[in-house]
Image: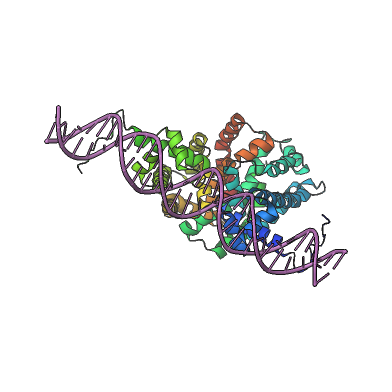
Length: 208
Length: 208
DNA sequence: AATTGTTTTAAACAGTTGTTTAATAAATAT
DNA sequence: ATATTTATTAAACAACTGTTTAAAACAATT
């Protein structure tokens, strides 16, 4: 029963190989469309090893999901909690950070949305973290916008706008490719442009 | 081999019942997660009848997909092709129309995005129709915005913004519910607000 | 070297899936 | 009424799914 604690070294091997393969396949095809055999093939290991290391497909998925979400939010929390940066600066940072991340993992938004659709209890961590934003300094700053304004705007709107403007192009990416002939490099360029544009747009939206 | 042409009357029944049931279940669960038995149960008919009337699950799905997409675009094409309305008026009409439609079918965006993820050849019609927008008068008007401007903005950006601001809240709806406690009625109110707000926001974004 | 624990393997299992079959019921035409 | 086509049914099918098994290969410990 004495467990060897050393997982580092050249051979963190099999277990990590499976996790990485699963991440890739899950992100590409979603939970239901991914078979355990897909994962085993991608990781180039025997089918039974997936269950040997992770008990079940569901457990493996949940594990990856939690890790990804925790990483996703922990990075953004640093920004939204900071009480020493202006609202505009925060928006710049959020946009820059997320677009940068997503350009390295452009299937991720589709993946998340896919798992939202399939209903399930797969991402309580996502909800929990998303809820935390409401208590952030960033949200407080959004609220203060309404102080000296004739028509109040629910901060939820602004939040949806920021996230939507960032994420939506990634969701429509494949349609954009086929319909407007936007190739991968063109898409990168568009998104790099948006890094600068979105903060400007949001600025115009929230200004009096 | 002589076919009876009369499908109208009280008993357009079974075939239509299956189609309607399929529409509901497909939209709720997506293609892969939906079983033929689900559809049969929802339509309250025998399992084999689905294949009897529609040959295969895939054929039934494609049929519904095409119909839905054609309807979706045919309605919007009337607006974007009109050469007698201003750009601002078109935006108002598009926003109002789509938000109205989606409030009656809030799962639809998730469904579409889901099917985009699953890759597949399931929606060539969607691509074809989306491409048609590039040749519309609306797109021409968007292009003309750059005439008297110091910094040009790719019309694709504006298009993505309009669609994103409309659709994204529907995609995040369930997260919004759980994370921010936005109930169904609250969501409706939010979206009704956005009917008025989005044209204003886009106006600010495109103005000089 | 022998024993113990761990990792890997091929094969099987049981359940679910889309689809087909062959028989029956209902509707229509002769 | 009889014959023929159409619609419906319960049952079976073959393929695929996640998971388990039992044996083998390997590594570590004594």
